[in-house]
Amino acid sequence: MRKLWLAAALAILAGVTCASAQNYPSRPVTLIVPFPPGGSTDVVARILAERMRAPLGQPVIIENVGGAAGSIGVGRVARAAPDGYTIDIGQWDTHIGNGPIYPLQYDLQKDFEPIVLISTNPQLLLSRKSLPADDLKGLIAWLKANPEKGTQAVQTAGAHVAGILFQKETGTRFAFVPYRGAAPAMQDLLAGQIDLLVVQSAVALPHVRSGAIKAFAVMAKDRFAAAPDIPTVDEAGAPGVHIAGWFALFAPKGTPREAIGKLNAAVGEALADPTIRARLADLGQDIVPRDQQTPEALGAFHKAEVEKWWPIIKAANIKGE
Image (cartoon, rainbow, N blue to C red; front, side, top):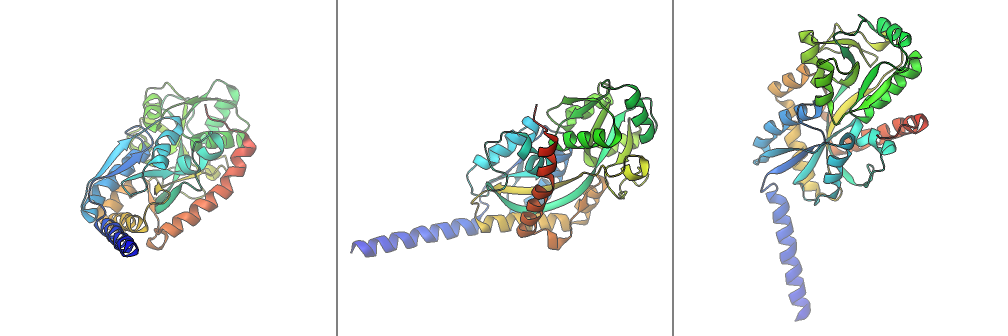
């Protein structure tokens, strides 16, 4: 009799679990943006969240959790219940660069489930409008003439790595100034309080187009369609200083595959929408092909990025501030 009761209980529990998975999501999903409002990550997250609501049948609520180059917000997701209701929009800085730089309380390779790779985009090398240089060669000359006097905002691990690579390849020396995110760093660049900023294009292009700041180069091998008049670093005078950004969604380890699948499908539908594609393209985002938008593709991509960049960062002995 006891065995029959136990079997019945297990069957009921299995049915409840299955129904719960099938009914996902039954309440709003929280999308953690690990930076303050207004930066590149925040802008892309809000565009996607708005469009994901229809296929999910529930709102996707943005929660900005800044601090420690994004590691605080990502840690919130690592510790969240693995039920599909708390996810994060990650990128190179938070899910690659922070690994060797900060003493994280979570494992970037083991504590997350990949959902979908959204887009890739190059970094832009920018300066305040009043800086006395009109091109990259002029900037390098100014930095060499003023060693240790120039300043670069460091709002992410990627910005720090890009600055280190730039110094190494150009023989320049300047100070790094930590910021909590791209938005406050951009505010100081616009105000002339900081000399240089390396940042993803989403937060920068409107200001570049208005002439409020200078854009010296795209930190990639090729120019990109959203700003074809900005030369690459190879063309402008600092060949080989390449670092690209990307955006992707991650969930806590152990999140059910059904939830991962529904989130992936919602993003896929959003990225197929011509309006969303146009908005992201205007921000310099290169949406990845549909066959690269699977959780498995993101897992392989993330592994390859770790294997490429972690040895470089460790060799440069970059530490968080």
